[in-house]
Amino acid sequence: MKAYLLNTSGDPKVLQMSNIPSPKISNPTDILIKVKTIGINYAEILSRKGQYSWAPPKPYVLGMESYGKVEKIGSSVTHVAVGDPVIVGGQYGCYAEKVIAPEHLVFKAIKEYTEEENAALLVNYMTAWVVLNKQARIAANEVLLVHAAAGGVGTAAIQLGKALGAHVIGTAGSNEKCEILKKMRVDRAINYLEKDFYQDISENYQGVDVVLEVVGGEVFKKSIELLNPFGRICIAGYASIPFKKSNPFTYWKTWRDAPKAKIMNMAKGSYGIFATHIGYLTENKMISETLFEEMKQFVLKNNIKPVIGKVYDFDEIPKAHEFMQSRKSHGKIVVKIG
Ligand SMILES: NC(=O)c1ccc[n+]([C@@H]2O[C@H](COP(=O)([O-])OP(=O)(O)OC[C@H]3O[C@@H](n4cnc5c(N)ncnc54)[C@H](OP(=O)(O)O)[C@@H]3O)[C@@H](O)[C@H]2O)c1
Image (cartoon, rainbow, N blue to C red; front, side, top):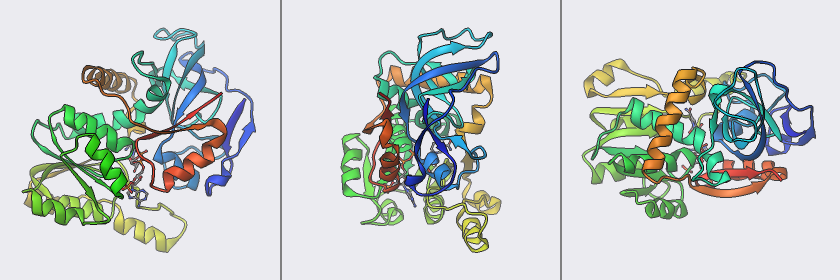
């Protein structure tokens, strides 16, 4: 089968399609899927650069989510059958014509969604759901600040936050992205390159109740300063931080900029800090299945559909990576096979 096997870290050019043997079912709970559409995630940019701690050892096939059709099932699988359209998650393997995943990371596709929307749902909406519903437990009329708001997780958080009744502020790095946020009915869109988000929010609000933080460094520090008493900051990423342990200087910078919990400051401000990683969380079968079902029911009830920013062909994955790391993308980037 054709696949993007990552042999070496580097820029998008290291992503080269090759022919490798198809994966084979080895556990009774395994499911073999013929991949049709792939969802691209920022974590895969970090993986490709060798900066992602959850990545398996090289060589491995990149790709953490896709949509496809079940081709074969292990002997104990009962919730899907051969031929069923499914959504697939996992640590690796989805930049390929076929992928194997354990049953608790394979979910029946949503029939009201297109193939692209099915490939765009799992990682972004599970992350936003966990942050807003399980961690922050956001209440109606609370003020939610979403960073990287025009991106995949960001647009998911805006839709879920609005549906949960929150007042949503989104930050983004261009006016074009802010226009997209306004079309999504955010209550305030801030181009942080034109005006410091801390200053803007301080001038217009008493503070914020919940922050979805995915950047790190100054963004984390300033966001904490904006929290109201009983506020919650939820960390789901560190887009500004290059985790390069091999270099002592950059590692010091990493340590300096990585979000940290200072308990005395939390006590003074009566706020809370959460962090999540959907990959570790969904290793637990019951949690994975429950979260997906809850999130799916919520998005269907509220007519929420993933925002698809751009669609690429399978041989254009290096271009898709180039685009995502340019920071010009919005919504979800997806890749179609065949
Ligand atoms: N914890 C989890 O389980 C989990 C799951 C999924 C994603 N994530 C994290 O959530 C974040 C968003 O992921 P995504 O896949 O939806 O990507 P994305 O938001 O579509 O793309 C990344 C965006 O981050 C923003 N950004 C801010 N500072 C940046 C910097 N210094 N370098 C690069 N980008 C920067 C950029 O938007 P602006 O220029 O507009 O700010 C960029 O477009 C990532 O940090 C990712 O690792 C975490």
